Every structure is written in C-alpha cells, then in structure tokens.
Length: 213
Length: 213
Image 1 (cartoon, helix red, strand yellow):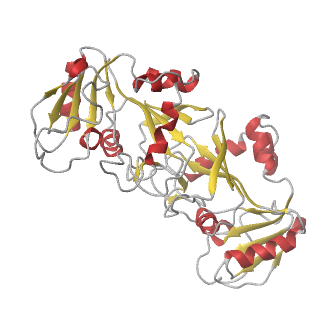
Image 2 (image 1 turned 180 degrees about the vertical axis):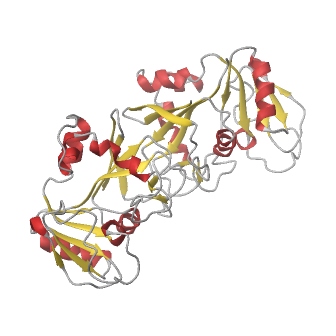
Image 3 (image 1 turned 90 degrees about the horizontal axis):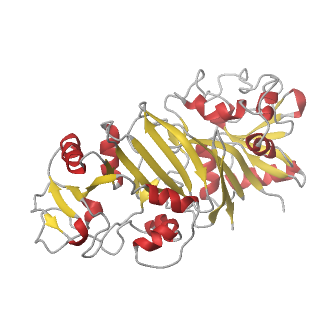
C-alpha cells in the first residue's frame, strides 16, 4: 500500500517549525532559516541548490531518503509562497525558480483557485481547494503506486496528522531555540495512533521517526 | 564558581513537562508518568526507589551525574506537593516518604510561609517566599562551595531561565506525545544566552545539554 510520508521536517528544540514574522524575505520567519542549516551542510542538500561539497554521513543519507519512491507531493499554500488571500495574478510560481525540485504532480492546498501551473523538469503545481482526504486521493492517483510526500508547512501537517492520514513522520530537531513562531505539535491531543519508532542524534540534529500503528 | 544546574528534566516530544490534570494521584498529570519510565529502567533509578536491577549504560551514567557535587536543591512548591494556597496544616512532608533523596538543604519556593522541616537522612525543607535571585543566594550559601541543583517543575525552571540564573540545563526528550499539559519552553523568547552543547539519543530518550555562555 502506498503511504503518505513526511521527511526532514525541521523543528527547533522549543518546538517551532517557523519563527515569528514569516514573509517574502523570511519564508521561515525570524531565525527560522537556522532550521535548515543542517540540510546545506550535507552533500545531498548542497546538490539541491547546485553547490559542490557537503558532508556524507547519516544526515546526508536520511535527507536523501525523503525523495525515495515518491510519486507526488502535497504542500500547504504557505509553503508554496508568501501570497495570502486572492491571487493578484499568476506571477508567483513558487520559491524554487523555474525548475522546482519535485519533478512530479505537486498539490498546493489553498482556498483560492488558480489554473494548474506546469514548470520545467516535470513539476506541475495543482491548486486544490478540497479536504485533506480528497487531496490525498488525487495525489495517490497521480503517484501511480509510489508514495506521496507531504512537504509542509506546520499547519498542513497538523491538519493531516489530526485526520490520521500520515503514515510516517520524520522530524529533525534542530538544537536552537526560536522562542516563538509556529508550533508543529499544538492542539493535537496525544495522537494515540502514533508512536516513536526511532531517534538518532548526529552532530547537527536529532532525527525522530513516528509511525502510525 | 559554583553553578546552578538542572539535570534529567524530562519533556515529551511535543514539549510538555507534565500532562493535563496534575493532582495528588497524578503528580505529573495525565500520562506524565511516562516521562519517568526511562529513569526506572536504569540501575541508578532503581536504587533510588530501593529496587534491584536496572540497566547500566549512558542513561544510567547521565542520571547519576545529576547528583554529583550538589550541595543544595531548589524546587517549586508544586514539585514538593499537590497542596495549593495556604497550608492547611504541616502534615504534607513531600512525595518522598520520611527519607527524601536530597540529604541536604532543600529550598521550596512558595508564597505561603511554613516552618523549616527537617527530615531523616539530612534533608531539611526550607519554605522560602522570595525572588529567584535571593533563594539562589541562600542555596549557594547552604551548598558551601558545591553546586546547586534546580529540580523543577517547569514553571520554576522557566522563571530561573528567564532570569538567566541557570548555568547548565540537561533535558531528556521522551519519545511520547502528551498532547497537552505544561510546557517547559513557553513565552521564554529565544533565550539568546543559551546554546545547545550536545545531544545524545539512547534507546530510551534523547539527552540535550544547554549551557549559558
């Protein structure tokens, strides 16, 4: 059975997935950029931004595992861009330039409809105004037997977690304190269907894996 | 220079130091007892409750390190007991029976005065209605050159953290979700004076060490 998976989702030691004051110049809010420093210290992470170098090792392997056997992606609108409310036009095409790193159908959850947006490299952004269950059904169909990845942000993950739709959730706890911002675990209750299956601390982060049982 | 140290302070993966509905039958709230399971799997933890067995290894060593070179303890009133408001009488003498595991002067922060309470084994509980700075000064004096340990709970640690009084803070992140309760990191800001110096995942918990720099 194909799965819905979350990978490499970074939270600070105090539980924030983004700092305060998110906006065009600070997609992850004040200080939130620190949450991804570990990514760009790895070889795989550096390749993602077209840079040489980076370290091999567990962080590199774990980062790369997030792209294995993924046939479609779902994300929240705030992960796609900083535009809120109605789309003023179709000029915003994501944070990733003209060749986004997805290379498959990517579903952007929003309350504001917009035509599908094909990009270079095989990514097509579909703007979907529907329930998590319905969006997931479309994504599974697009993935043609492969798994679906849920990218984020925190609000979108909370929504899918609360609905019990996520099969595997991998977090990276970053050893920094953001102090405020957007929490991942907030008003979720104890999520009794999920248990932690493993933890691993590296020099950079602590990886935590949760699975629905 | 003697230090103020926090050791083995357990928080859930979602950041709670106690579950909801704390009371006499559930000092750590609903589900909060799970936060200490790892302690009682260690040899040192089992000795604390007069039981044989338990595992050696990093959790055991780290747990034991919390008692090294400690000459006095500070705790919040809720860690001492479930009584709130005025003391109805002096019958409550702590959660620990007639021989508490401190064996030195132990300062209980409260707004409600009460005579000092000498216990078997060298522990004397002093009930102090004063600022964190003043209580800490008394504790350093009582410790006679050794360090002072701040026991908890979460509200007391937050108060000392916000005042920049804690030198070393060791947390144990327990791989469980409590869903609600009392957070350790809440309204603290980014605590710019503190940095994470190390993380270590064992089979049971992830240890995190923060130091004031």
